[in-house]
Image 1 (spheres, rainbow, N blue to C red):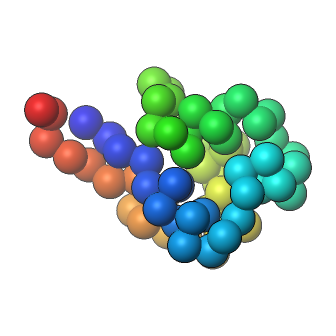
Image 2 (cartoon, rainbow, N blue to C red):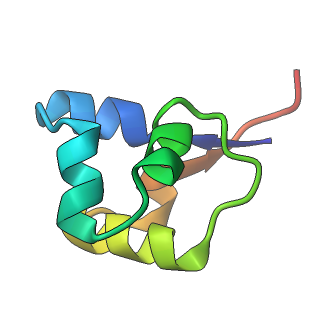
Length: 68
């Protein structure tokens, strides 16, 4: 199971997800789904924009966890 760490990263930096979506020019709803770790599929464009904007590697943004 893949888990999004977006919430932890942006909360540590005091970034509001609506502002993040605007800054990376991406749909708020998609960013919100990833923030709440509710996204089923991760668009490559979104992952790229988040990694660049937040200056993180993909393995910091997403982690592989064993299924519960």
